[in-house]
Amino acid sequence: MNKETSDYVKLFVENEEEITWVLRQQEKLRLEYIMFLKKDLPEILHRQKIRKYPWNKDIYEKTVKAIIDDYSQKISTSIDMLSSDLVNKIRIQK
Image (cartoon, rainbow, N blue to C red; front, top):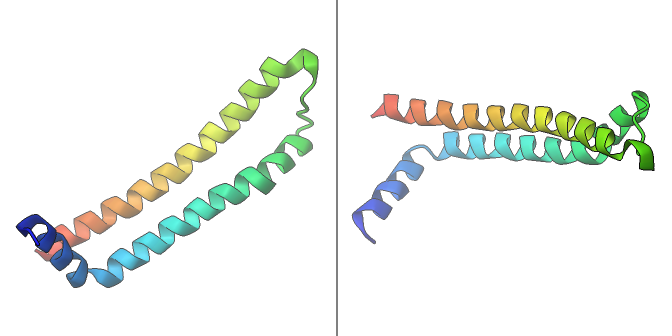
């Protein structure tokens, strides 16, 4: 095992609980995103009476893309914050 790999293993062993917690939270966020796409998005479109017809295809696609992009950004930001918090905590420990 080279030094870099050894350092990563040591880092994981020393922070296993925190790393595991962050990975579980990220997993929950990813599952939440999948549920949003499968369940919530169709419901939002239905409630707002946004339907796909041949004459509004472009507007429909832009609207759906905007909703998905907004939600995706929020999920990505949350995942990034979890990662950043973990990195900062590990730095502080050193």
